[in-house]
Image 1 (cartoon, rainbow, N blue to C red):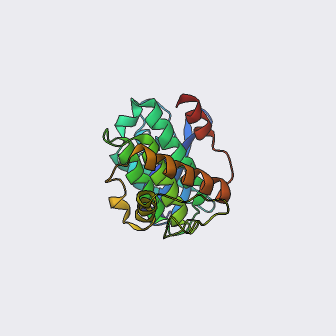
Image 2 (cartoon, rainbow, N blue to C red; image 1 turned 180 degrees about the vertical axis):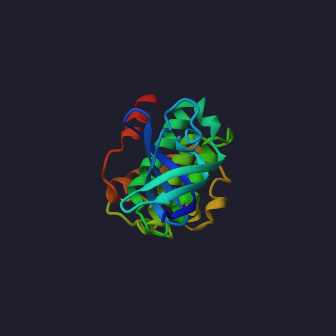
Image 3 (tube, helix red, strand yellow; image 1 turned 90 degrees about the vertical axis):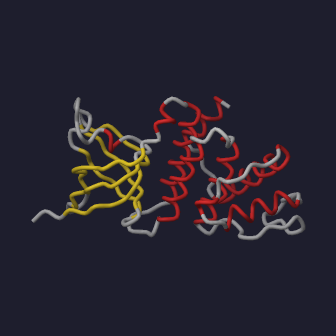
Length: 224
């Protein structure tokens, strides 16, 4: 007897398989990160095509096999269409997807990371928010979700060896990023001076705790 599950999730990446199929990585509320095959998703007019595009968010009905999942249908609520015409914004989104893919696992509780990824894509679509600030917020909060980022900052108490003292505004901003509800993360802007310090902190922590190259970031760095 076939067993089906319905999950709420967002597509992190998709890979062509064979002549007509796709393999997708989904970040879900119920099962953490899962992989699924979408049979015939690359055929013209396939009803599965829309649900296999990166950043597609909605409900996904999966057939649970012995060793893998198969996508049977999807109900997509947000495609983040703005990023289809914003190449640089899309590159930021792909970088966020790579970081989320690196951190998440199947059957883990990944709801916070999923909400962070979703809200970060929304922020990339907001003209009032600068992409470099969105990136800093995403990086710092992603590390905080995984327990690799301090919950409090002060200008007198650097955490990593060699940390420089921070302006009060920067220390407050970092604490806000680490501890505020995800839905309220992208509700502020900062001065250029504070943004510079945020970028330095995020870069140091990403190097210290992750220490790996992301392909999409390499592409992004050639564009910005």
